[in-house]
Length: 119
Image (tube, rainbow, N blue to C red; front, top):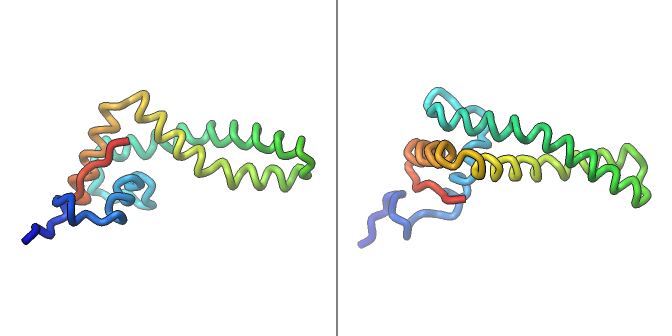
């Protein structure tokens, strides 16, 4: 009989693995987050702000060149840029600070009783 614990790889559900990819995107970190977890969340969003601005600027100019009016181009660029910027900034954090990100992932995995994901 297999062990039904969450640490067993056979019994881990895809939902649990997805939550490990997005643990830093949760609304309220709470008092149980480690320093590294809080640092990663703050850094991801701090990097995402200028990335959002750059993507909005480039994408809205491209859409206006294709014939959309200014308001619609800005709206579409804003909606499209948010997920792109957050994912891109998370990857940049992994590239620039691999040890700190790895420690945050391991701390989050311990807190969530799961195995850490490897980006």
